[in-house]
Picture (cartoon, rainbow, N blue to C red):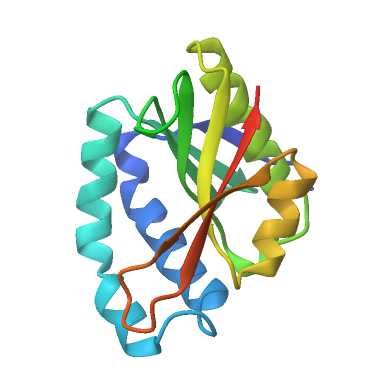
Length: 167
C-alpha cells in the first residue's frame, strides 16, 4: 500500500481524534477497562488537544491512504526528564485495518528522521507491557526495554515499560 505521511495541520485534528478513539478501542480492550476507555476518549476533547499541539509546533504526523486518514504519530524533542538529548514519542496509533501493512514503519521512520534532525541522539516511548503486538513492532524498529517501569493511572494499574533507542 502507498501512504502519504506529512505533518498534520489544524484541519486534520478531527481525523486525528477519530484515529485515537478507534485505535484505543481496538488496541486496549483487553488491557484497560472498557468504561474507562470510553471516559478517556472524548473525541471533542481529543480534537482540541490536537489543534493545540499543532498550533504549538509539536511533531504530529498523519498517515493517509487513498485520501483516508489512517494513522498518526505524536512526538516531542526533549521531554523525557530522565534522559538527555532525547526525543519522546507520545502516541502512535493506526486504524486496525492498517495494522501490519507498512504504515507504522513509515510513520516511525519519518518521526525518527525529524527527531534526529532536531538534534536528538536517542528516542524513548512508553508501551503497555501487555501490548505484545506493539512491543514486537518497537523492537523490530530498534527499540528495547531499558528496565524502567511505571503503573498507568487506570484502575487496574496496567504496567508501562519505557523503550528507547539510539538515533
